[in-house]
Image 1 (cartoon, one colour):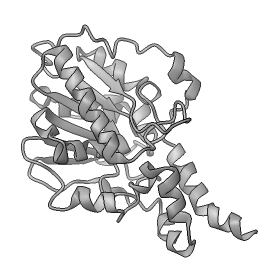
Image 2 (cartoon, rainbow, N blue to C red):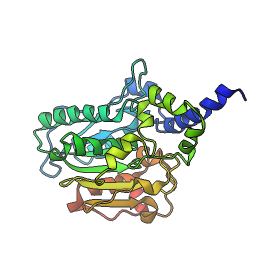
Image 3 (cartoon, rainbow, N blue to C red):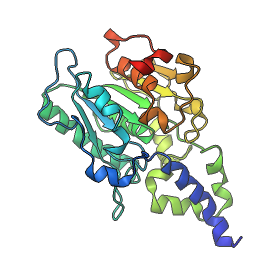
Image 4 (cartoon, rainbow, N blue to C red):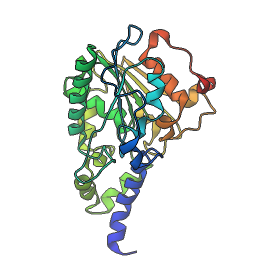
Length: 286
């Protein structure tokens, strides 16, 4: 194998693994699919569900494809639901979440303000998949988001970065590969365990007061590894392993956000803990 190909191989593997976050409906879907009741700017929260829900997609995702299942699931249960695009790179359509994560958190800040102004609500709840479950923690911790958010629910969030099954630990052996990732896709570089971004995010504690955190993970996650690094530590945290709720659940990283109704049911419990119902394998029918 030519030396330059050996150099780029780890970058290619990282990119392909992150691309697993794209919904199977395809990029073209994002441009044309209706949002089936969500992003309805005339929606007013009900007394039963007084907080709007902001959905935050994962790396290589977008505001439509990531939520074709879960957004209608919430809308049909009476929630005002909104989703945003963030982390866009110039000349890269549809595939988002690739820009610097601190800048993406600033986009979330602006979007939450827009949602609160539109709905008249004092606070919102956030549900995010993968990077979308981790990035809001920066918003909460450094951009004043804690005053505007009641709960953060992460579906397979890379809260402490990822080694991608140890592949990122090979980067020091390939001079220039880390710089290439940082330059081309800083949003990927920020998600590597031990990156400057991860160190800043987690220094001084995982959580901030006043926000309820829920992490929903699967032991079969092949992107955020080891899967237990997704869990948070704090007095206002609930860490959930899907297989503790249903041993038959075989969902991996993508499915937990796109199709897993057991994960969705547990997320629903986190949004409305006063009316929570026990999540089991039967929750797939709820």
